[in-house]
Length: 113
Image 1 (tube, one colour):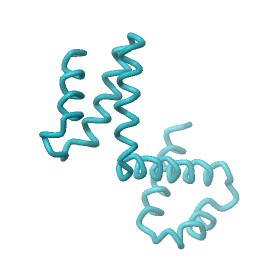
Image 2 (cartoon, rainbow, N blue to C red):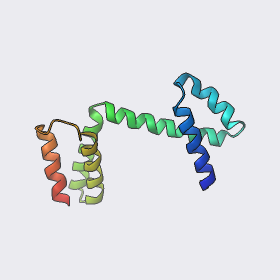
Image 3 (cartoon, rainbow, N blue to C red):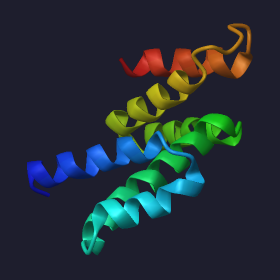
Image 4 (tube, one colour):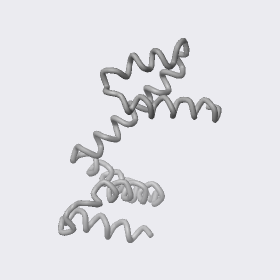
């Protein structure tokens, strides 16, 4: 995607985020005009944002990152394992420090450093 097109997508996404969800479709129809590719790009950002929100809200999301970290570590892919541990630890950064699974994840992540 060209830089100018990317900026346009990002601008429309940010402006649409400020609206109530019920107003977004009309806004995108107006703003994207006859450019279905532009609208698809903006809508794809909403889909990614929604997935991100679910991962942060649902307790299973962070645990999925922890499972991925374990799998990557067992497969010997320390780069992917570290990234998955970082995602898990970021999502649980405000968790009670006495949670055993959190302490175990921190120890496993430290071993990869």
